[in-house]
Structure formats: C-alpha cells, structure tokens
Image 1 (tube, rainbow, N blue to C red):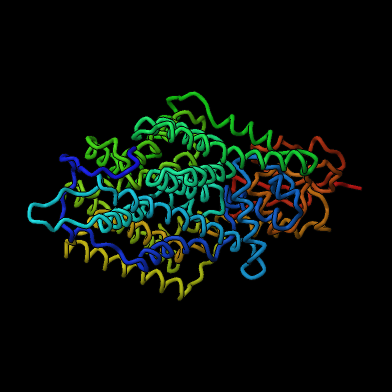
Image 2: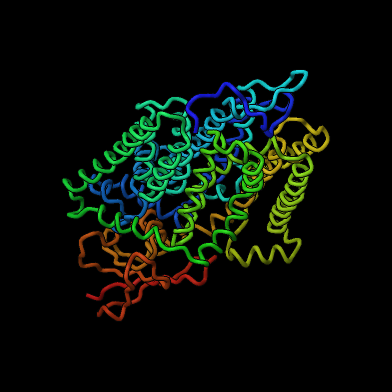
Length: 583
C-alpha cells in the first residue's frame, strides 16, 4: 500500500463521472439518519433473552457490587470468561452514571448507542480518507466538470455509511446490550486507524493502531487482533520502501497491544478477584475459537452470509472486479485485506458465531462504496426495484399484522399472533402509531423521489435499501415493540418466582442459562450462589441445561419440596421449578 499519493494517475481507472454525481448528504442529515436507525429499539423494552440479557447481567452485577466483580466478570455469581471485560466495564459505568435517572437497563444501552456512533464515525471517515486519495479519483473528462477530490471522498463516505446501515446482519446486534456491538465498532475503528497510518506512517500512529487492537483484545479475544497483525505483516510487502520503517512501526504497535494485555493480566494476578483469576479461563476460551475448516462451517457461512451481508456483498464483489487493475492501491487493498483476513478466520472458526460475520461488515461496506461509481445503471435499477418491492411488502405486512392484532381481521393473522404470545393484551399507543405513520410516509416520499427524478448522485443505488431497512425496523420498534418485549422478556416469570420466596436474601442454586440467571436476579431481586459454594435453601431448575453449568437434579438432594412451577407464556418448552429445603 502506497504511503504517499502518486503524482501520476493510472490510465485504466474504472470511474468516469461528472461533478453532479458527487452531491453529498448534509452533516445534520447523516446524524439524523444514524439516530433514526439506532434509537428505536433501545427505549421502552426489557433486556431480552440470549446475549442481550446475559451481557447486561454482567454489567449490572459490576455496577451493583464491588471491585472483584469488575475484574472477574460474572452474572450474579456465574463466572463469564468469554470475550473480554471492556464492553462490560463501559456498560457498568453508564449504569453507575445514569441508572438513577433512566433505569439500569436503559442506562446500559447508552453504551450501546456510543458503540454504534463510534462504528458509524469510523466507517464514514475511513472511506473519506481513502476516497480522496489521488489513485482513487475518477478519470478527467475531456471538457472538464469532473468532481473535486474532497467532494468525491465525501460522496463515497456517504455511500459506505448508507450501506453499513442497510446491512441486515448489523440491525439486531447494533441494538443489543452485548459484546458484539462494541466488537464491530472497534473493527471499524481499527480500519480507520490503519488508514490514518497509511496517510502518515509515524510512530504515534502506530501506537494508536496498537491501542485500537489492544482494546479489541479486551473486547472479544485474541483471534481478530492476531489475524489483523498477520494482515498488516502481509501489507508491508505492498508498501513503498523503506519497508524496514513499516516493520519497526508494526513492532511498536504489537508492543502497545501486548502492553495493554500484560497490564490487565498483571492486575488480575496481583489482585486475585474472588481468590482466582479469569485470565486462564479466558485463554482457554480463545483457544476454542480456532479449529480446522469443515464443510458444515463453510455451508453455514455461505447460507448466513447471503442475507447477513446484504446489500453490501453484491457491490463489494463488483468493486473487486472493477478495480482489479488497481488492486495494489491503498483504497482497494486495505479493505480487501481486512475482508480476506476475516474470511480466513471464519473458515477456521469451529462455531460460526455471528460475531465472526459482524467483523466483515466495515470492510465490505467500504468496498461496496467503491463499487458504486463503477456499477452499470441497469444493475443499480435492478437492486432498487428489488429493494422497493421486497421492503415495501414487508412494511405493509407489518402494518397488516398490527391491524389484525388490534381488530381481529384478517382472522388468520390475528390467530397466529395470539398463538405466538398467548396472554398478551395489545394497547393502542397514539405516539408510537404517529411515528410509524410518519416513517411510512417518508418511505413513500423517498421512493417517489428516487424513481421519478432519477437523481445522478451515486448513493442513490443504496438509499432505498437502507431506507427500507430503517422503515421496517422503526415499524417493529414502535407498533410491535410491546408484543416483542412480552415474548422475549423474563420480567414476568422472574417476578412471579420471587414472590414465592420467603426471603429474597436467601441463596438459590440453579442450572438456568446465563440470560435467565441475569433476568431472575435483575427482575426478581434474588441472590444466587456465587463463586464460593454455600448452603442454599432454594433450588431453581430449568429444563434446558446451559453450557456453563453441570446439570442439577432434585433427586440429588434430600428434604426438598416443590413450591412453584412456571414458564413464559410465549415459550412452553421452558419449564422452571423452584424447590425449598425442608427444615
């Protein structure tokens, strides 16, 4: 990758367009779009089952207890060595600062909002820096009128951000209180820091890159940073001399990352939280993230990636083909190397976790933006029509199902909605309905503007895909949020279980999952057995045994009586039983 911008522009550049095509979105419009994307779904709901409730449980435990829980992440006494502590620390800090005002669950999501903004900022500025480079510029027109370098870079940055927001795989994870929300943001930030280093290959930029990868280690382990350092090592061979300087700077970055991990390890070893240390368990978890490629893993990647990376992957594939003759240029090679790195990591991942897929999104969004200026009009129109037809039908179905849930017509849809969430009583919200109507009207206005005016701006190719995704999410987060919250929350069952206990400070042994444990502790206010085994008066059993704990059977314990049994109305396969010891 070249360190300086060459003075001669290759004659085979694939981009040829007038200045009118580089009309950019206003800054206030970009910020408003990001807030419209991220805010719905953060407000007005409980922590949901799976990673959302589990990771919130770690943050809440840290905020409620002492320093040992900050160093040894756990969910009400259940050790959690997966990933890293950074996302939990940030969420717990937000709970400490804003929990008294917003409630603990919403306060933790302030960190989620910040994670998303970091990722969006990094995507936009990375694309802008790469797009303004000389080798990325369009060919000069015979009679002039080609776009300016800065305007062209801003146009590509707008397109990359729109594509990033439109990726289906990002939608749910960007709204969860989870490690993954910070992980994808830090991948984007590492890409940004690498771009800064290409522009100015100084020791200070190498240190900043090392810091970015160091906090990435503390977020989701060693695999992604280790793969990226191998990527940077390979990238040195494409740099202009002196390559020795880049090798030295790479060592400086590695030393910075290692120092961050070493400080964390040293603090753990000296303090020994809960008379132990999570570092060894964390290393074992990291070792389990790498395995030999299998046909099942490859099949899962292809099946899930088709929808997870939409709409980025068609544009990214076309960009790689269109820029094939300039593949050594930084604006093409850098996101391409990131994509290849994560592809190799995905193939060697024994479990195709969605965090692995999330790592692709920043580099794919930037590659896709590079494909916008080179894509044929017919292909752009085909993607537009697909987006309009598919997303409009989905939005209309969401409205129809909401109407059926409130009125009973169509009867089939209303019956299915009732079957999925028995016992739920719908309530009409004028505020939520008004927002949904405004979003729907805005969507049809956007479609009319795009199809009637045929604007020359290049980001027109993705504005409908992104706008349609945001519309569907806003409709779900307004019209259907109470129903979804009722289906995915453990609040009701946790409160019901806690009401059958004579003293909430009594100890409970359990085998429930991490998300269930967090929900019972947070909503029920009960205390579970911690790191040190103790004599507990209660035993809470769930039918499903998680991977963290060994199964517990009441037959192993004498003198216990069943005092409560229940399940969430929306999930009949879950059964919870509470036993109390007979004195």
